Amino acid sequence: MNEELESLKLEVAKIKDRNSAVEADKAWETSISRRLLLIIFTYLAIGLYLSAIKIHSPWLNAIVPATGFLLSTLTLNLFKKIWLDTHYHKKK
Image (cartoon, rainbow, N blue to C red; front, side, top):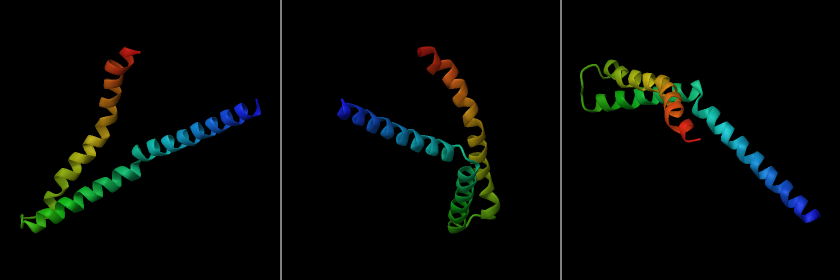
């Protein structure tokens, strides 16, 4: 009986640890910090690439894809909610 109880306690502890990790990952995925970093890295990568291939005004032109990325991150949650409401929740 004690072994079973200890085994259950261990399983519950593992589930709680996993839930904490999943919650932390979700918090990071939806954080403003992550989005800002991705926008900055997108801008820098595109700017460097456009500079390397000698495009006129590379840093100004790099704003377009970075802005597109920003807009996509802002609208994805809306589309996710719509998709969940129309597809996922119907199956339950």
